Length: 361
Image 1 (cartoon, rainbow, N blue to C red):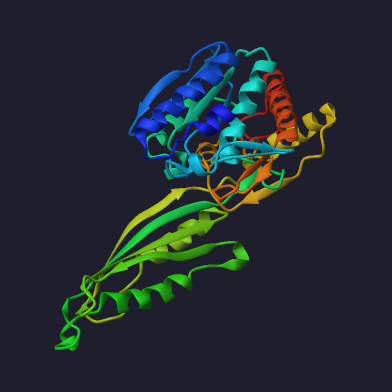
Image 2: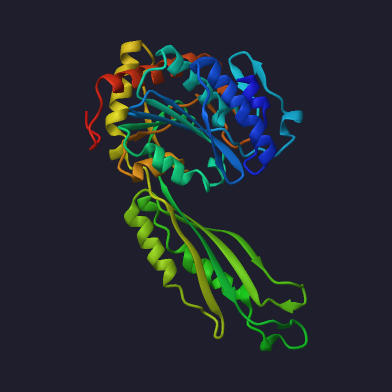
């Protein structure tokens, strides 16, 4: 794991992503006995191992991280007792290590594909189509995102990402303020309308995040841009909010609105993971591992993409630890062989006895 964590891989640093991809390739080759296919994407490479000719199970992960270049200098990989830490250790380089060991333990069986992408942390712009293509036809997708306090992730909210562009008219803030159409003030009105679209009882959040407006402190601002983040547990809720955002009307006479964006990823609904989760619980029991728990995650992953295709998908099969995207993220070292054994057992079970396309045992 030290090699992977020490190979910095910020999502938008192509040179360092290339070096990190080489490190992932080397670790994978040492355990799987074969090199991956390097698939060039915009800004990074994606790595695909195909074991045999009949892909049935896809193991899905990523090697990019949210940490800026140079973080490793002040926060190097280290192990203290049962905790390993370093930028990207928990999300999700430990999960990659576990996966390679798991498939090695199975003897690298026919029917498994391992796809490791380089742009998940920025929304998978160049790997999204690749993920959908590679997943097409497989019976199950197992995602290496970190666990949630040890629990597997059987559901994830879907998300929508929007930009609301507001056009007003500039004027001098002191000499002739009434001649202007204040885009910042219009944005303030719209923020209140947008906030009212949330539904906490349904787990739906609609959050105004970044606001950019104005050019000078003594000028009525002519334009503003508001970023809006939507999260929901069902596609129906995402569509409700999407429709409402598209009906927004200006509150100040003369202002105009233009909405860009839309639903980015549908939810990973529990129905798509339930049979895999039950199989994982069975495998854990047979191996004498601690009982598994399940949880919903508010964030999205590439598992949302495969679930949207109707493919049974189970997430959170990566590291046990805490602090994803936070200073000091860490991995429980003693849990790594347990989770590698769980993944190996689950893959082996699925190759012997798959679940059907409806996600039932």
